[in-house]
Length: 94
Image (cartoon, rainbow, N blue to C red; front, side, top):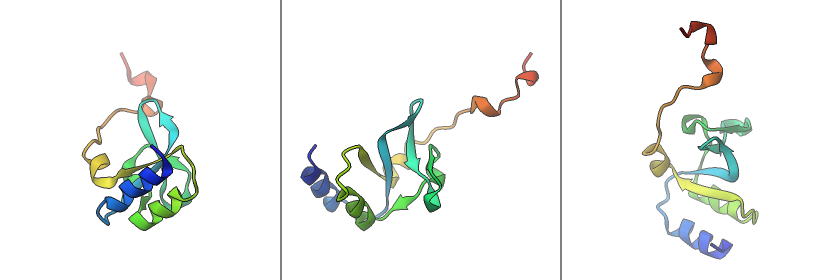
């Protein structure tokens, strides 16, 4: 999709918020979003920065093809829970 097509698609969306993430940014199969308050990246959408439509358009104009925008509603409809192995104490297993 060209930048112009992406811009047209975003402009046609309702004026609610959107998530922003770098398309290179995955951890396993989890999307890596920009974190709130410019605190790096996060795979947790509840810790991710929500960009307004105008902010997303401004970021798109930076002309970075790897950036992908997702409607907040769509992402929140697809959240699933998982256990993060790095926080599990191996000594608790039998």
